[in-house]
Image (cartoon, rainbow, N blue to C red; front, side, top):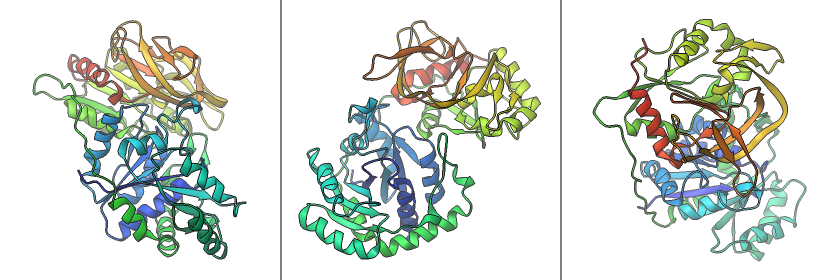
Length: 456
C-alpha cells in the first residue's frame, strides 16, 4: 500500500524533536491535511502532545516490543486512513536497546517501515562542526535513509551560509531552520515533559510555532519526501479472541493521575471482545456498574495523591473488589495506588486503596529503568508457566513490596530481578506491559474476566 510517511529524528535527546514535530503537525493540520502521528519507543507523554495537535490519539512504534511485521501492521492500519504520517524518533537516531545496540532505535523503526528520515540538528554552539556531525550520521549505516536536515536554534543570517556549505559537501537536503524561541520551550518533570494540559495556552503557542515554521521551513519539500516513500506491505497478525458473542466489560482508569495507557493495548482488548469503560479514581465515587475486570493505568498518582486519598468511597470499593477476586491489571502508577500509603510529590504520605500493606515512597533516581522481558515460573492470570511478555519500567517512586511472581530480565544484560504481585486474578507491579508482544497474555486476562460475575 502507498502510505506517505516520514520520520523526524535527531543525534541526541534535547535536540527539539517534540516541539518541532508538534509545530510541523500543526502546520500540516492548518493546511488541511489529514495527519497521523507516531512516537518511536515506549514514551507516553510525547504522543499526548501530538494528539493535542491532530485531534486524535497518537500511537507508539517500538521494535523491542514487536517484531517488524507486527510493527508494520500497527503503523499501517492507522496510516492507511490518513494522507500523511509523521513519526517522531526517540533519543539519538541510532540509540537502541541497552545503549549498546541499534535494535529498537529510531533507525530500526525507520528500517522496519522503510521510511525517509529528516535529522534535526541542535546548532547551539556549532557552525561548521555540524557538517562532520551530519556526515557521520549519513555514513554510519547503509542504505542511507536520512534525506534531509533541519537546523534548530540558529540565526537566519548564519543559516543561509551554513545551508550552502552543507549541501555543497553532503548528499542531503537542508529543509530550513528553526530560530531560537525561548517562549516556546516545553518544560520537563521527573517522568519527562509536563502534560499538555499543563502548558498554558498550548494551542496558541503551537499555532504561533506553525506560523514561524511556514516561513522558515520548506514544508513542501518535507511533504514531497514523505509522498515518495515506497509502498509498504503489511498484514494483520493472528490474534486470539474470546469464544462466544458475549462481550467482557472492563473498567479503565483515565484522568489526571492515570493517563499512561498504550493505545494499541486498548485496541487489542477491544478486538478480542472487550468493552472498555473509562472512569476516574479522582472524580468518580463508584466503579462503573456491571464490570468484570479493572485496569489501573500508569501516570502521575504522586501529583494527585491528596485528591486520590480524599475519594474514600473509590479507594474502598477498589480494595474490596480486588479482594473479592475482580481481575485487575495495575501498572506502575496504578500499582502505587494499591498501596497502603503513597508519598506525594509534596513529601506527605497519603492513604491509598490498601490492597498491599506497604508504603510507596519517592527516591532520588530512576529505579530499574528501561526495557525488560517478564517471565513466569508458575501459571497466573496473565502468564502461564514459562510464558513471557515484554515491558518497560520508568519510575522514581519505589515500593516496600514489589512482589516476586515474575522474573524481569534486561535485554543484552545479565541483570535480572523478581517483581510483580501476581495471582489467578491479579497483575500489580511497576512494569508497563505491551500486549502485542504476547497477545495470549491479554486473552488470559479477558478469559479470567469472563469467568467472573459482574460487579454491582
